[in-house]
Image 1 (cartoon, rainbow, N blue to C red):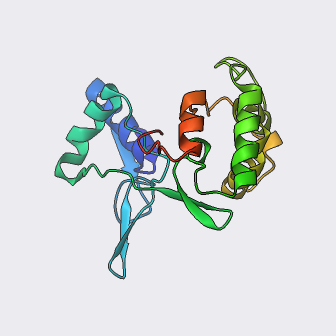
Image 2: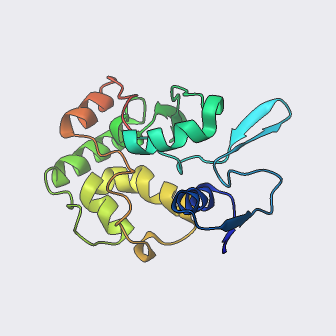
Length: 191
């Protein structure tokens, strides 16, 4: 018998594969329900989704795998996300929506992005996460948002993190997207 600790996505997926192969298994979960970080909590009339950036249904294969398991509890919701920076709210993602920020910040972001445009690392290039940000977005976007935000989220110096995982998860706008977002043509569907 295979013992699986945790009934999150990984544990449930392992159980499903073992069941399909006919191997006996048991899943142990310390919480009162399954889902791990892919669940929601209701408190004081509000719903908090724990998954945040962890569950991405970008491919039909993953979506078709998950939808039968979650049945009618899957509710697609159009994202309405904003970034609060430099005393104002801008549309997400920051790197493609700088309109409304102080003029100096927009200038720094545009000039920095233009300086690295066409030189972004490829999928197989190995850099620290900090270096990847600088090479992908330039110094303006890096200093005004990407580095401080990600250091806050990951609670560590970005030099200690690999960039291997970011190539698909962080929106990488084109030069046209960055310029459009700087003049107020929002890019809400990006990311």
